[in-house]
Amino acid sequence: MKHLIKTALIASILAIIFLVILIQDDQEVLIESAESKAPSNGPVYNQIKWFSSKDKDVWMMNQSHYGLNAPKKEWERLAIVIDKTTSPKTAKYFQLGSGKLEWQEGLAKQSYRVSCYMCHSNGPRVIRPNYASSLRKVSLWDKAKITYWNLRIKFYGRVIPHPDHKREDANLEVPFRWRSSFENQVLNVKSCTSCHKDFGFLARGTLKRQHILTIKFMLREGHMPPFGFSISESDKKLINQFIGGL
Ligand code: HEC
Ligand code: HEC
Image (cartoon, rainbow, N blue to C red):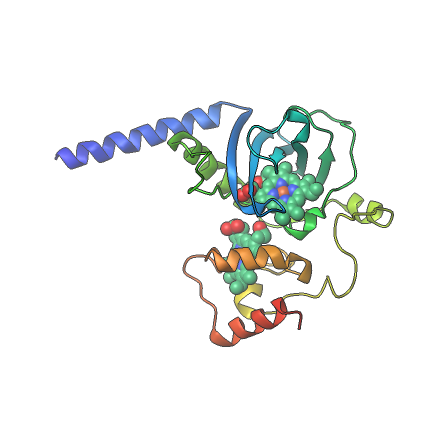
């Protein structure tokens, strides 16, 4: 009986937290990223904010490669804008001057420091904090928020880069996505292409050679294939060959 009351209590607290998250707009989280590392292999801190309107979702992020106490101008400001009116949805990627996580149309774009598409093959990425971070613990409240946001991110389904990126890319020094045919070779392995394909049920976009860093991270950490799916031995071999450049 006592156990039941405790479970019911925890369930209601969680339900209240989710409700508050749903009602409150303009939330932020600040995490140490599990995936992104500074060139020195040091921690990367991401402060992420989400704004939603009927037609559009905006994800903004301030990112520090120099610790939590880095001066504000050292934090890189990035944004992804999702157009929810098209099918599939489209995403526009912005490198912005340093500043607050406040979105408005017409913010001045800067040159990309790195090609976003290397890691963002399908729009916003599921947020994965380093739970072992010594400087940035994740509160229960933040965990609930991240869980809810990650559901939103997964439920976008297929998200393609906005057509503008293709037009602009030709003239960029650091392109939005790498252009060579080698960098664009597709990971053609059944255990992955059941979802990582461009069209159809569960489609999440083909994975290309330029996504190798992210592919390696997802495999190493056991995030892919997702829970309940497996990789055959022969597919493992093929993936390793692909990662090795074959
Ligand atoms: C090396 C991989 C990598 C590259 C390159 C990269 N990102 Fe990300 N980005 C991530 C990961 C991973 C997350 C999810 C947060 C986390 O777990 O650290 C993320 C999160 C974000 C978010 C917060 C919303 C979300 O997706 O969860 C924005 C906005 C963002 N990135 C913008 C950009 C832009 C714009 C570029 C190109 C200038 C870029 N990113 C390049 C890995 C990358
Ligand atoms: C059942 C469908 C499914 C299968 C099979 C699958 N994935 Fe994924 N994959 C997803 C979903 C959904 C996401 C986004 C959610 C997440 O990050 O957990 C994702 C995310 C990824 C990402 C990050 C880019 C993105 O789309 O957000 C990579 C890289 C990736 N998967 C690699 C792989 C590899 C490699 C395999 C094969 C070994 C694989 N996946 C098999 C569904 C799948």
